[in-house]
Image (tube, rainbow, N blue to C red; front, top):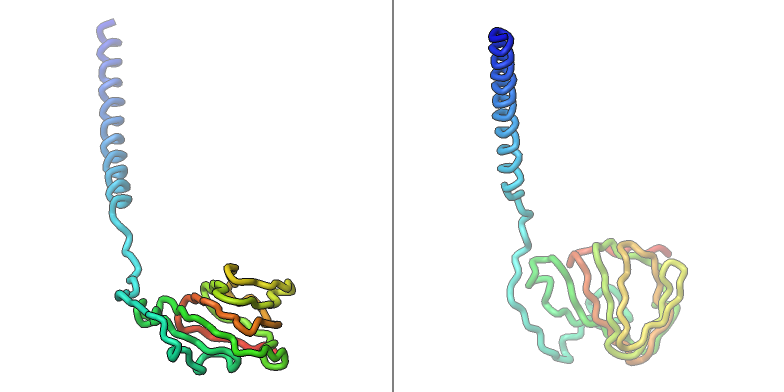
Amino acid sequence: MAKTMAKLHAQARKTSKGKSSSNKSSSKASAKKRAAARAKPKAKAKAKQTFNVNHFRAEDFKADGLRTYARYRDLGMSKATDGLLQAHVIRLVPPCDPKVVSKRHYHDVNLQMIYVLKGWIKGEYDGEVVTMHAGAAWLQPPRIKHTVLDYSDDCELLEIITPADFKTVELE
């Protein structure tokens, strides 16, 4: 009986030693996993941003933008965000001439948001015709095909686009 008890104690010690060495390697692996989880991933370099104020001046509306039927007031956000975004106020030139404005196109952008400041604008977006009035805002998903159909004589829009430098593709 004493021999049997000695064997059981020896087996228990072996099992215990096996568990403890297993626990040690397991706890080392766990410690490595915890350390890796605590390590912060390398952050992407953020675009440098500077404080920017742009006060209204009528003479800041320029005919040097994307469309001949629009005057653009650059709000200086492209320079202030190191190209992260572009923001401008667009005054559409009256009267609306569908032969000039109704060119189907899309913009190769990440984000394009438009807010109607004054008047109204009617457009077609992937087959849906919508008229937006002062106070309306909409998001144009990247590369959505659209056409300006009509606008009021006093139409003004605020447009925010990312990135600041983007391509417009004419489809017609």
